[in-house]
Length: 269
Length: 284
Image 1: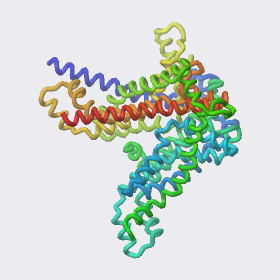
Image 2 (image 1 turned 90 degrees about the horizontal axis):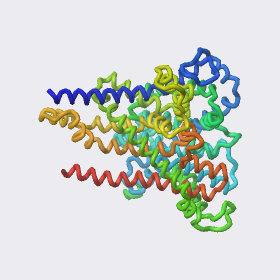
Image 3 (image 1 turned 180 degrees about the vertical axis):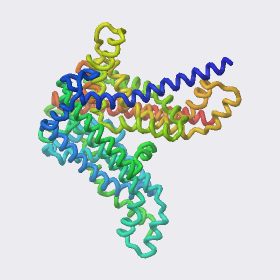
């Protein structure tokens, strides 16, 4: 009798904390979307009135739109570079038995372990020493390194699930290496590639520690710009930008889920 | 063709990325170490004086210990939240699981600045917490929550929770359900089942999540500066201030290396200790 009371207490505690956890996970996103429709000029919650004014304001804010475009450009370039170079490397090392392949794997994964600020600072120091001016190109270079670990992990996992007999068959039936790669290998690792591109794009678009050192006034990126704005004042336009980012991310997540089963890929990481 | 040459040829596709990493990752890190060994910002003489400077300065040491403490506290709180979440996930049907997965991935995928911004709205003077407490009559005047240590801890816990929830859920899913049924059949209460079976057997996931959250919270520059404010100085903002701000390159290089080794050292040490500890469990 007493045991069942204690067991019920256990279920109550677990349920309560889990419920609180779920609320905690959802609330901030909801809050951002709600506050972005405020009619007021402060971040007062709940909003005193409703309007789309801050989205309108956003359209006239070149100082926010330009960094957003730069961010999109940098993220797209870094994603393509990391997917091509990282994808090729993953194909090479994922099934190799050689010790050097494990060393390379560790090397390509290490940007994930290293605090990214140290890496950002180190790149800046090297560019300074070599007299290279900061530009979109230097920024893309830094972001590519940050994105590579995702590609190595996700594409590598797809490659390991690939049955090597299929490739041997294709080659022995007279197909060339390039044809085999295009018709056999690529379709079979497609999901890994799509999922890793999705995650790489988001992590570049969201990157702060590297951009902090490599972005200058001419190559301002969105997260740094928003950070600078919020350091100065609690500008409501940031709410509208956040609303846009949340909605675009949601659409991207649904699309990537449809094409690549991205949730399973991230969950299984 | 000898097997070895053929196997090495398989590695050829990795060559371009290897070259990129040597030039844009390994070389910069070597440069970072090299620069940290200069005595002055003008690069005139070399000595390990920057490291001596850091470890003899109480302020710097405080910044380091505060940062590591922040990471540890946030990781601990996230762990307490993640287990019930994972237990409910495992007990749910496919719809419940899909909802929880969505709730975990949504904040993980939206930008850090957006997530941090949400906490500025929640903790602000006119924010949700203050207006709720005032409306309920529990507080008489708005309390300052933003720019405080506790506010920062709460915000970071929420922001990094997904990193903890994913490995914990993965561990719980691998758990053999028969063990719990057997324990309950033999008369163990649910608390006992949790602490003697579920927790020890899912410890690898918990430790993996703890380390992820610890490292992420300790290095979260945006959240630390915006929710913590200018008066709470932690390692990331210290590095930024000493490099881009004061342009003391040797010192900032040394500080970032010390920070790197502190974080990686703790992650590595906990990994080693936990593996040894877990081997003990396996043997028992």
